[in-house]
Image 1 (cartoon, helix red, strand yellow):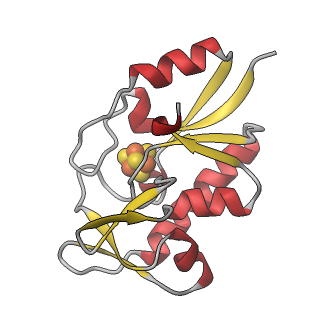
Image 2: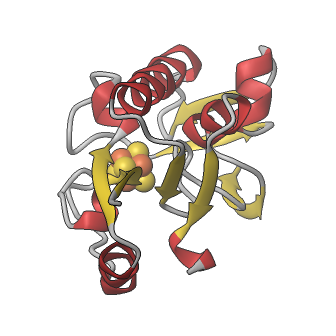
Length: 149
Ligand code: SF4
């Protein structure tokens, strides 16, 4: 029986990334096909209302769990704080997952929204989760990245 799964839109070839590019991943396509998944594409940053292209965003402190807990900070390279906007995107992605009856999510590694194991903080690649991944995990979604396949 086919199962719906949330998937970071850029992994499916949609040009949703901050610089207008995509990250089509053939391993992801193959995995979805082989396991009879129905991909439900989401881009939390677009769902939050951010334009594409947009400024690059990194964690200044903490990670997705910190942002949800009210600590930590996310900012654009020019210094605009985006904590609230990223939380909005995470809630929209969660709502989409619920409407589509998803229990799993396959998310793009290292993104400030979608990262599952690693993120960028102050220019360094460090262990941590993105804001949407943290929100989905908090709501008991099973979340993994393209690098787990
Ligand atoms: S927010 Fe997630 S889906 Fe959107 S471009 Fe970034 S990694 Fe891809």
